[in-house]
Length: 70
Image 1: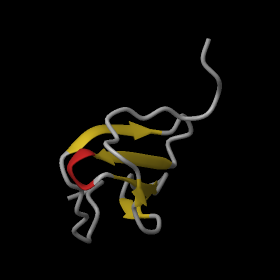
Image 2: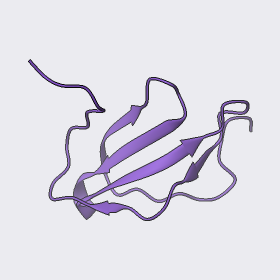
Image 3: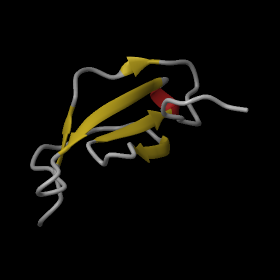
Image 4: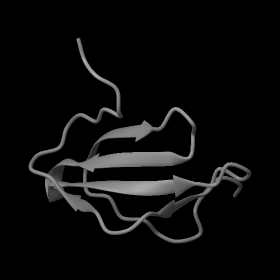
């Protein structure tokens, strides 16, 4: 199936999934495992692959990328 990763990628109760503005990164906040997982997105195929180990983060439910608020 095009655009589907070949490996099984486990996320635990993703509260939010975010794709970077350039489309090269995807992030999932895993509320039940208290972590955020980053994935690389292949620009040609759209396939995703894990980008390292999940980042431990207490109760992640919202993701923001760069910039400032206000």
